[in-house]
Image (cartoon, rainbow, N blue to C red; front, side):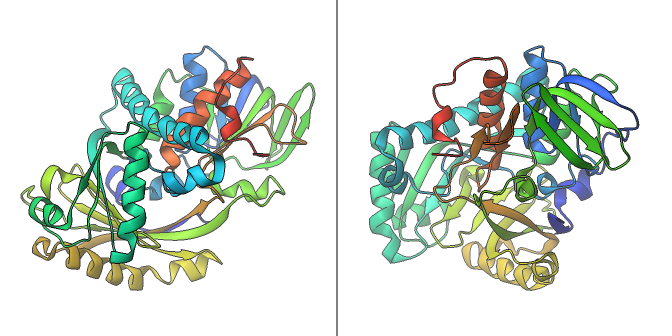
Length: 398
């Protein structure tokens, strides 16, 4: 599956910062991580920090799947509002899922500082009502977040207009959010404690055999990796590995402006998103650009998704022009990527029936990076034989 098309800013700007060999010999290791995007990179980070020998392998050049197309917003909110998630899985579980996402932002900040990575910026997040009819449930959402002790403030329409300069019907300002560059974050994490012969790309795996003694992977050129454990960090291509219908595939679109000479955007450069379905989201970049994304479509085929890039670019430009006409937004890079949503907005993390010694870290939805951090920490615990009290929230049979 081609997971993206167009010209993602991160890929154009940062190129291919590191290179890795193809697998051309047989290997034995403790753990193999299948996938070297942001999910696989975080998984590898937790394994090497725990002193667990591991090998990482990817079918593509590192980062050229969904990771390069990520718009890299880091929020504790998932695609299912908290009040609705409470109705689905109960108050305690829903609040805990949200809290884990908040903790993930702080943990990602710690990791970037610990490793010396610069690709992390703390931000606030503004979630505004796109339509008047959304105000009732959005205020309900504010109430349950406040009750769960999230640092949030309700802003009336006139306050948003005064502070941020655009019209709305009110919204929630959250103090905890951040933004990153998932492409370079993944690359930098893969270099942490890197040893030659532990990361391979352009090596598609064509066969996987699970047993109670371990796992054997075979690549298209006949090389094998034998490991005690396997972590699937394959994202939306999981449909190739399990039968269960757990994800609805969607296509999203993103546009980045030309670089501005002066950094004169909205207050605090908060992350902005709204209650529309699909929702609009806006952020800035470190090099004085504005990114706007959304206009999602159900995914049917690569070519159908890709042929809409120009149309979606124009629609997203119109969206940002309506929000901030004074920006004089001029598109420079546009792209599309495939992502997915689950029935409750939560990821799938942990073992899967019929695949002994296998674990999945599947951070579907708009919160894929924070979910990937949660998944990496949980699976590390599972591999070490430690109990994780939150694992039940994300298991396949929940």
